Image 1 (cartoon, rainbow, N blue to C red):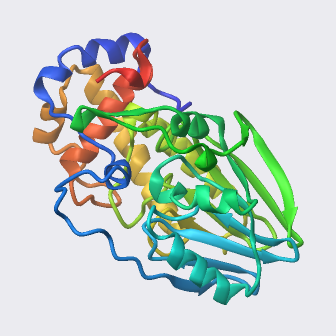
Image 2: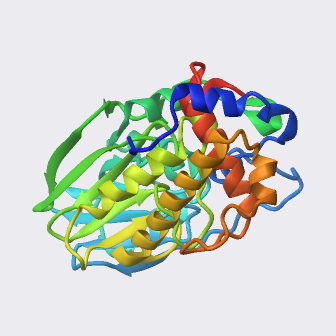
Length: 324
């Protein structure tokens, strides 16, 4: 928890008038996964690109969400499984990367379909599915989509991870690689985790980082800006200065890119906290151009402010993130 945070009383007092002045924001990765938008839109076209990270480790991109594959005598270990409809392209890419190898383990960084779309198929072939307990819980039951006023259906049984944990971290060895995976405290949702390939000096951060795009803080799923700040600082503590960091989308990131994003989010947190103490609404913050002068800019600063403000209010409110 960051020092200097507003108290529960501060946040509640500042948030009383928010609902009337704000329209509901959403989480893009969830919207994409749910098929939101125009029903006449064409289905996504996926084209897998394999980028070697080490002799045994590769990034597979172009599948809606990034997938990282580790090759070993046991078969393949995947971090995330791509979007629904991309599994065929993923399997073809894996067949070239590791001919004849079966997927033995899938670790999901969070529950969204862009990260879990291939789970069921791999599970039916015998793969172990690992995730945070909250991610599995959200997949198991219908999920409310606030901006569409509807529920996403529960996922099929085979897609839901069965090896789960709540706090701390776990370790395993696969293909001779030491792997640590552990809980990230609410940077994007309430069920995020990291995966650290220790010997390869590679960290998978899911949607906890987004240095080249606007941050998606899913406040209605438990994500909040303070959790994002702390989670990024945790990630920056892994590996050495040459560590490579991989988010759910985009290419390989340097520690410096993540550090710049984190500095901007720390400043955002502090400015929004102070504005809330003064009773500002999100509209007041937008009119005051509260994000001007930060180490980085956002494509949609108004939405970034909305998500930061709403996430802080929801995090400290006794009703938590279930409020709308």
